[in-house]
Image 1 (cartoon, helix red, strand yellow):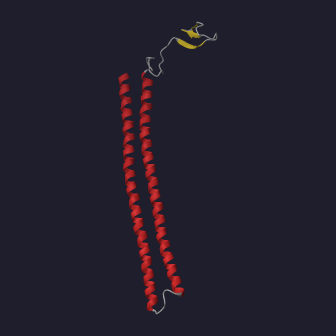
Image 2: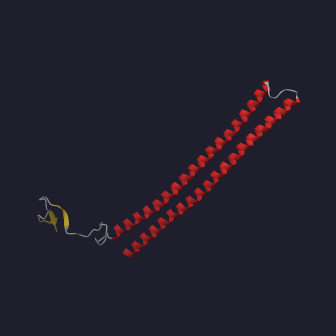
Image 3: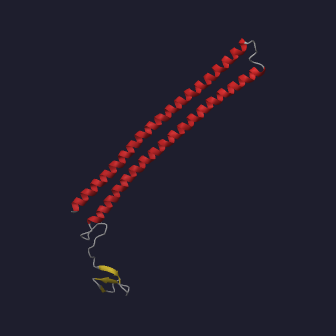
Length: 178
């Protein structure tokens, strides 16, 4: 019976450790995918901001050409104010794109750190579960014989609770032995 308990404890420990290690490996894979997603988000954000600036410049150029085609001076008066407003709006839009991209990247990197931490915690839990199971099995294995390495046995040691005289009761009688 003892060896059966030991075998079961070993199998449970190996299973707990394997599950923890598998969870950690899966979290590392997920973290790598999230790191790639963050890099890709940075690239896409940079391209979108560049595109927004280019579109704003194209709109400004079209506005200048339209004003010039009407015989108006695009660099004076309300036309100049309109050009400044268009330029500011274009830059504002580009910065909004950059800020949203940065927020997305921070969110992705935070999720990556959470995933890595969860994987490490799962691995630790596997080791702790294995240790707890082994300790419990060792304690139970000695329960019938009183010779368990961690106590827990029901066998008599010959000593009981302290007696009223201050000594220890041995074998049921007070001996006065301290």
